[in-house]
Image 1 (spheres, rainbow, N blue to C red):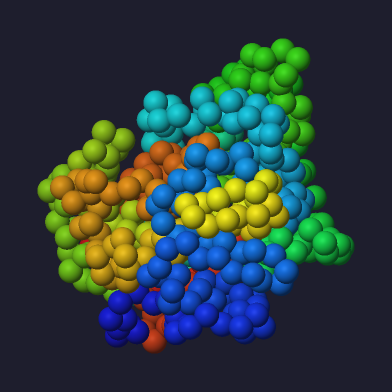
Image 2 (cartoon, rainbow, N blue to C red):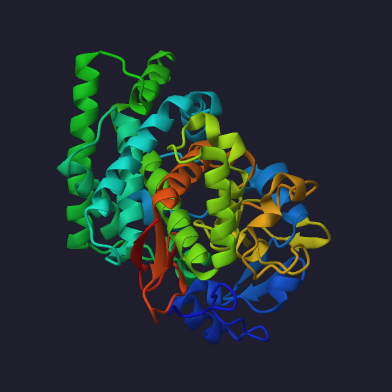
Length: 454
């Protein structure tokens, strides 16, 4: 038997606001474990911390103010940009001002909802290859679901970006991002409080090798595509075409490389984690798994899913959305107030660190019924009306909302449906599961699961 969680696991919540050093220690171990009970039940939090104001926007109205209405005043922190610069350069995830606006304008057409349908076949082809590999294993074989979902997602995004898989080089791309996250990816006090900007980036051989390997792959593929001058129906061709449509303002080859890196990083890491958490939750709640199987049988009748099925796979989508509510891949957004401001009645002096935390918003007891329970039904169409759109924010909000949100949703729903038709996954008996706040929210000790054919 598995761990038998009565509800999805989460770090214990401190009963009261911790002192500075206790908070720093908890942040170092696991950022999401440092939030006190007040953060899950109250409104805006405002605290003097190490000489700066720390403000947690903890309501839909305050999230809207920071990320939408006055977004220009709340910039990505220097620490975030410094931590990610080596791997994604000046990509739009961390760029600012006019450069960011130009990048966003050029990238948006490639990822708009109307462009997603052709990529559905890519998603299903990659999923079918994973199914073939799982089918060769004996019943009851154990797999590392986190690694398999990451490999699947990196395959999907590379095929979508380049019109083909990268073969052995896809592993180089995946390893490069994994090494970078393992070495520099823990999101702690230095990032939350924008302290990393004062710290030197010490040379690290692992990071240097990882970024050099990534550069070699991406630069080679991009250079060959530019040289061949043959447009294809993939994301790279769309980026290059958008660049060439703005003479004198187009992105440089290096900036194209950075945008490709951003899309690959965001496009595989978040989807892989959301799928991993979905499998875990389904393994722990057999009634939810049964409801999923009932929908797959009713809608698909045994055939593989395709893009036209997305609107009918309501419960499958609800499982994926609920997994991202409980375990949002991007758990924390950190912003730096440029000028004095006020959020409601609370003053926000220039230089304040302002936090928007999907982890907190998605588990806030004032806005969700039974927020700590796994209830996909809350996202079914008949139950998903009237919710403030700034309460559920797995993809962010406002002008910097993730451009790939529609792509990720289509990918998550199709792959979950396709794999769940053929296999049930069971958590290794006795394996402990706890979310760990790195750059994304990963299971701390991995997710080993046993395969059972259906």
